[in-house]
Length: 525
Image (tube, rainbow, N blue to C red):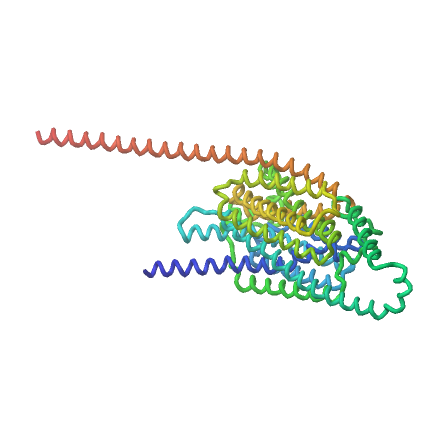
């Protein structure tokens, strides 16, 4: 009875730790993810938003490759996460006054912190999966806890975007009332002009101009022409400064709360999630930093890692396409900034549901089927964005596009993360940051060329990278299955040898017993 009560208490404590770990990430990315979605819109002038995000992810990729494994080994995952979350606070503060000399340094600092946070996702999810298997006495199921975590993580997109929509919509309504009052006060001075243009003609003219603008400069034809951006700036930025400051204040508060939750409740993890066959684990090693870098590059040149490199890079590329191109070229350009949170909420809802379903049923569906389905849906989504005329897109149609792309993104993020757990289970301190490096490189490249290429050109590049990704993943999976088959054969051979040795021992025992019995019978005779 006492053992059962202790077991229940340990399970309750386990679930509390796991849920608080996930909830802290939920708060953090409710804030940062929402701001990231709007960077290409609210800081669209001179491409400051996309430029700052490029700095963040370029820095993040470099730090992930060179420093993340070293820091994780030296200080542990908890200390690294808590320190990294303070860099998000600095970035939020910089957005209150977005100019080059505030955004560039804080983007660089954020890049160093963001890579650590992404790197520990695999480490903590693997830690909780292993701990649960020990508590329950069942085989470890990393996919289950990755699915649960990313389901909660993707909910951040829903919550953060709904909060931003409420703030932006509320202040846009207030601004509209002010504009109407101002227009009414100047009505008398404009009566002469109004006598020459009827209301119906005025509305029709405005509608035609808007339709022509959407058809020529939105959707796949969006090239971020500076003159076009200047003429239509109200499509991209909040109509009232107080809306911007209120939204940033809420996001800043969420970041601070995330830091507090992880600082108080996150467990310290050291042990099985780190590579136990590396020289860097020797406490007497004086070349700790050099060995960490050497291990990272050695892992990077691993054949299996090289084969999964493209699919991880593509996952980041596709993620950045949604938050950079879909939000600006389709949502903001066609319907205005206030619709971005609504469309991104659909994206978050779909990604959340898919991540949860993957955690539950991934064993039934299998990795190959999920990746194939994601590739087919991405091709369909790109084709829609490429060939449909922007002025014929309705809000609900775009809602469906975001919902579909969100579900596919849920598959890419969860399943590429699971790949690293399955392929490199004993080297997660290096494999986790390597996943982060490649995923972040995809994001950095997408934001980096955002102002240089038109959306249509980017779509063609994405399709090429997707085709290459599926080819290399197929080769990686074949190698993994062959390796697993060799291990099983080796285990079977060992079992057979053990059984043969056991039979020989039993046979020798029987012979010795028969000899002893014969000698005893002779003595008696």
